[in-house]
Image 1 (tube, rainbow, N blue to C red):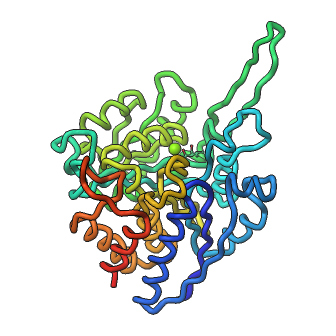
Image 2: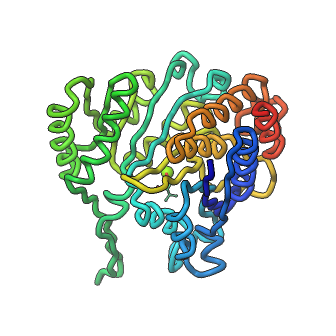
Image 3: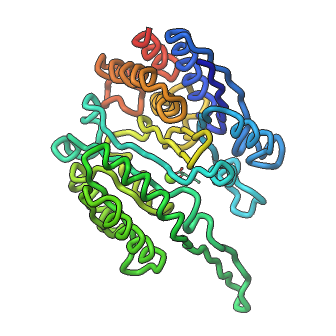
Length: 358
Ligand code: IPM
Ligand code: MG
């Protein structure tokens, strides 16, 4: 099969890890007799430096024309000036919007081999298997915002959480469908005791469950309580669905359950068209260029891309099995190595994955 992917390396460790994920995809194409083509485009800080725009039109066009988009990471201290005209993150937010990627899937499934890398006790984490559905193109990230100078010399700034019924319905149905294929347990997280927008979520979701998903175990949890439950009893969740900002925060928290952000992929998908796949970790400017970044989250993101955007479940399974085998064989990058344990660099770790694939 012929597939065309757009690669968006971005900033920081982005280029290093995307190069490695590409090697894995190329090896896979050889192994399974596919032909994969790649187009590399700019996004984030590097795009600001080159064009003044964190998301040049050429990038949008290439993404739309491909079968799947694999992104490294964006941002870094170089572009952190709060008074700058634009920021690398704006490119990420816009590509989500431009491609209609309203659902962000973040699986939190610890590898058995890494349980001891988790800051939490093994008996709490063992058996965790959560699939987050974070709403990605609405809410406080995209609501009216602004700032104005005040007569007293201060400034007033505001960001607004806005949701419409249809935005809630579409992400909720995706999550409910996924729950149906898993343990049939769906948790919706909101702040309905305070926020009007959350009260709409509650109403809309309750109606859909009652009318369309009576077979699911459904519960609602307030976001502050959820922050607590995630680290006290993570095994009691299956599929979790929530709004944009709550999902942003909770998935970073949940990412600590498996021990390292460096292991977690995510998929952003819409109603149709290509999806965008990325590691959930950031651009890690502190280790950029040192060759020690963990490439596994990006490699696993490439596997998600094959599964969700290319109907290549067998190929995706092969990648995931190879990663698992590498971990089982005891290979570690610095972020997942135990104190005093030897660790591999970005390229060496990928080579181990390629060996297992071959
Ligand atoms: C994420 C990131 C982004 C977000 C940032 C970089 C804009 O934290 O994908 O979770 O907040 O959505
Ligand atoms: Mg985040």
